[in-house]
Length: 84
Image (cartoon, rainbow, N blue to C red; front, side, top):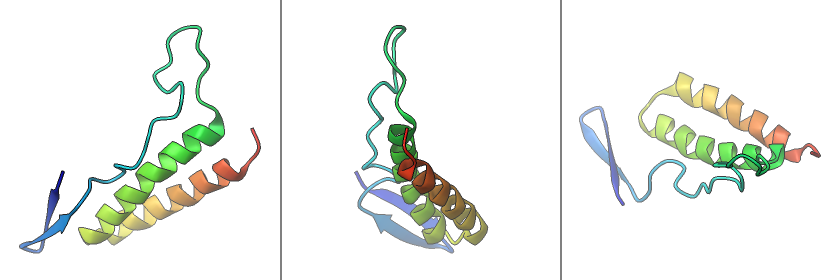
């Protein structure tokens, strides 16, 4: 799937959508009785989504949003590194 982002009147074509590598953690769609994803799994999933969004924000020339996503990505990396 190809996405088109229009920035300043020009198309920035990308081969994949933001966060397309992200796979929901096991238990993300948990049914009653199943366990929820661990903090580490959730942080890994959220981090992969944030990477794609950060890239998109930079390509779309949204520096403040890219900065905020960078801070959120750092927090996700910190959570991923913590033991459950």
